Image 1 (tube, rainbow, N blue to C red):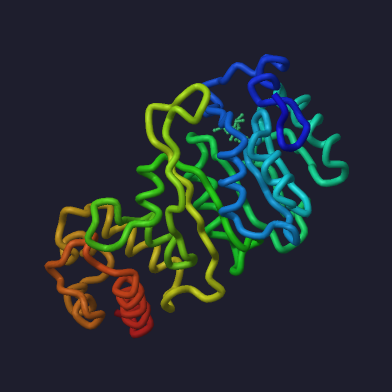
Image 2 (image 1 turned 135 degrees about the vertical axis):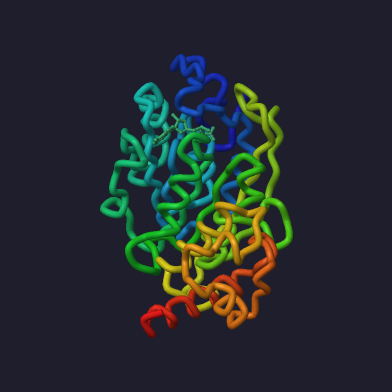
Length: 285
Ligand code: SAM
């Protein structure tokens, strides 16, 4: 069967290179090149961008990114069995694909990338959330990336994009939305993968903000949110008691009822409380 880029169909690539999926590496491969093209298009115009892809596997999404015109793709893959298949893609798109073998959690990718950079990946489930948190919390802002187009389990995607008042709202929602705009853009059923995972997947589009949504000291905000959601069923006056002896007054000064629960407080509220705590600490309180 002919493919749009003249390379063999993915099923053939997988059979020829004997790429039997390994659970330990979170391997669920997307086989439909129309679907990978749709994911690549969610990332916007790639022609003037470098793209970082984590976990290219047999290269379905990689091929789509290159076909959609990405200036350059840096693909980081832990499984050496995938390298021959990726080398064939590299030969089809000379000078536009660099493959680095290794663990994305350990490799310093910045040295390989030229801005502007977009990250597009069907992430291995076992490292997806950790990578997202690292990308959202660099030493300085703005980060090396302009946008992240990432596939997660639907449940994780819901936590990233959740609004106050919902059960999914929590640390990951605030961590992401304080620094970026996040929305779910696609849902992908288990049957689209080989082997099919147990859960539905979702693609999330995250665009970085130049400025944080509301001012707050990052370390204080992180502490407040961790304490609030660490005991999310408790009232805030109880869950945040350890942060300040007069937490009730500080909550009120931030416009939050002390009897409120964490999941009903907006990011604006958490930022106001962080500023109140910072001010109180400055007064020696
Ligand atoms: N992108 C391919 C696709 O869409 O069909 C494969 C996605 S599969 C869910 C995840 C890929 O990430 C696998 O190829 C796996 O070998 C790779 N991987 C797992 N852990 C990794 C890590 N720590 N660093 C880099 N790649 C990793």
